[in-house]
Length: 326
Length: 280
Image (cartoon, rainbow over the protein chains, first blue to last red):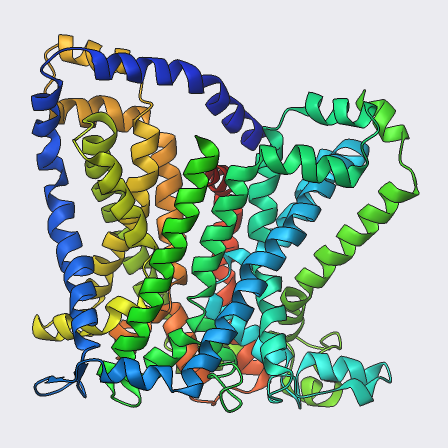
């Protein structure tokens, strides 16, 4: 597993410059390049039709619906900015936005930081001082939750955390720590923190795998030079390693942030947004507005805000990535 | 050099190993709990709880769940939907990437950016209009509706990844094929596709697993029992609060099982694929 990653990355590294040369040659050759590229447009035709129907039209319809009052049947009533005005004063909506930030911390920030430490430790210490096999087994264990469907993982955790028959409280009682037994998901003070802990469990493997692959392609000479100059392990990590794997760090932060805003399955199966609104998130709130409260205009407004936030986040990340790459 | 390092296993190295082993064990606990309880007899469970080693082998929990959830049908639906989506989405990605990566169509940077952003868009912002359109066209509560939607969503990512892979395609091969008089379509199927087979394989596996794990849109679109996928069947049963601890662990085992199988089968491809995705 480890070996294949190394070769794949190594091959890509080697093929990099040569390929760029040939691409440049290709672009420069022949005056007919423009008309030749136009002939390829037919290959984009199926995607153009499908993307228009499945992405573009629904996106526009959703924004339009957010300016109307609609139960899902009958005609839409134009409502102007009424839904958005209601959003601004809706404490449940603001609570859900704050909870989103908490989930970004649990799914992007903490896994990225801890994942970097774990990946560096596996790569620098375990693979080199013990054996690459041990490192790859540990990596596989840490990655395992990532292959589960979210809903399955959420059901398992819901069962472990159940206040009566759940394994966690039973275990605490068995070892005489019964006073610590607690309905973690049922108490508004602990529900969000518990969901965050479960998300960290689920997410950690992803940055570990990506960062370990990234470390394979770093230049070991740089780290050794820094070590000879007396740099500590922490300094080498922050000053030498991190700058070299910056592209992967951006990818991890972007994809995890986007994923954290889609926490629907977790909330659906673990808490239903409760107790009260203690774990409400925009994703689940919009679903409830659409299909439970039949307030489609309001649900569309929440979904439109989510879409805008994700657009801004992705554009900023891509811009930052491009700036650092260039 | 590695032997020298191996001898250099100071306390810090052993401490790191211990810490990482603890992390790995904690992460595996839920899996162990499922395995421990999925086949535990109910009497044993009520007497000794979820942590004891089972004193018998009982398949009733799994059987009850299999029947209530109509799990065989759900498995078949998941295989059908994920299988169709992964093939169709890879085909669509190839067509797009051929035009963008090799054809170098004008404005490709913008087109690629649009594909990437389409992949990031929250499904919440598309779900109601899609639900509305599906009802309009008589596709609501059909597996076809889910197949179409996920083909497009997965192809958005596939196009982005495959275009950057194909933009580094050796131009000597393309020139040689052109000299031999091959047309554009022939070059695509006879030269580009065979040469990029490893990447296409990674995409197939990714699309299959991603579609398999999807919950939100299938929950909205597949309301009747006979169309539900594995995650939807599990999720709706959970929502109805008719699960007891034994059916839950049985259900979890049945839910975990297929993905663990995929994980073992595709482990090599997956790890390589995660890397491919990361570099872009």
